[in-house]
Picture 1: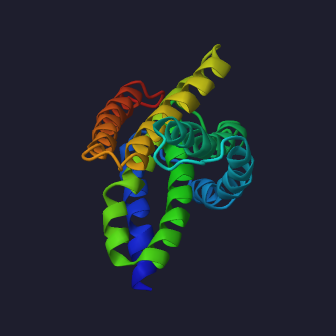
Picture 2: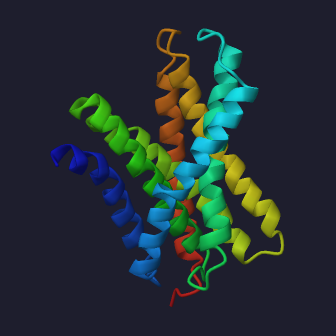
Picture 3: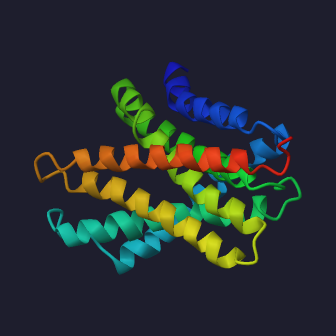
Length: 224
């Protein structure tokens, strides 16, 4: 029970943070829960299926090949995982009437991302233990949150723009870029000290995420 709590607590804290940042028009709890579950179940299934295909096209044959690790980070992992979340936000959340202001893009993208991250975290923590759970609480889970915020920022703009497709795809690509950069520096940890690049990527993502939240708060349709 304690391992399960350790695994899901970081995602719950981030969800509460985003929920309270949605200052002017709260989203219904039921629909938030549905998006979280869609992230934990549907996006994970999509990821597993697409990962099998991607690994067939881009097999990792040399662990110390920087190019192969680049392909793995940005395409096999980054794009596949973010695309799996993007599909849920675009075809489930964004089409719903509850998605009625740009900030909602951030809310629902984060809920889907945290569903994905929570299930992923449960598997890692139960496999590798408490120390892994503590480390991931300050690294991988917040990273997934930043990917979700950055994707959701553009998808929130897209809902109310004539350039819907361009902005949606921009959100997907931005999330993929930061996800790929974060993983890439971790994957090439055979180069001494290079892993610090992952933390730099995470910090930049957090800074941009805070700016994205502030912009959508200021431009809320419901702000008095």
